[in-house]
Image 1 (cartoon, rainbow, N blue to C red):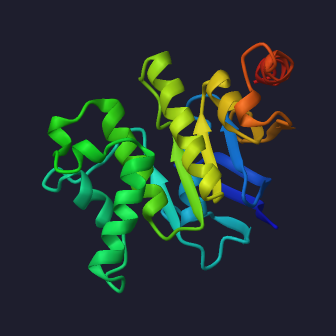
Image 2: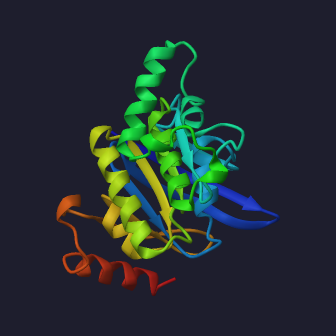
Image 3: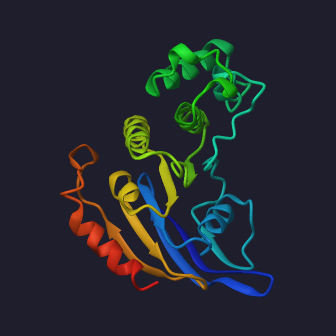
Length: 235
């Protein structure tokens, strides 16, 4: 199974962002989109989930899918504590005891059990993004979209959040489409990588990462990084 965008065309103010653009993502994998700033990566995510509409083209496999969206900023509700921010995305058809069980499970996975009653203003940036991860997986979605969620964080915190994300994903292998401009971040996290050109956007490279997440290190990934750098040099 896969999700496909076929012959997608999209323009803003007369400028063509996508023109007969095609891309195919594998279901149940973490797919990464790499590309220069302003090339249309966020627009692509928004087209997939319906926040933006393509001028022309076909979306295959996205119909009737529910989406979770993790942004660059955590976007937590400031008047709700950590527990209630996660509970907010759960169906009211679920009993309160079952919702609490789900929330507790994800709080444990991101190691925030002790902070369940804290409000967003009391959390660090890394902790807030961990709440965002928990909320995205708690939501009954089939596809998780991530728009540079680790941008601006220091290297050690990025690595920590990547490991937490992978640990959650291993237990619940949903389809993830991840946008970044950081090659190392993409290589540590993703199963397949797409390098995009400037607009009008084309796929310059698609590469599958055949190393298990737990075995990855920067030395083993050097060959893949070289391929990404060669593709990005064409931009």
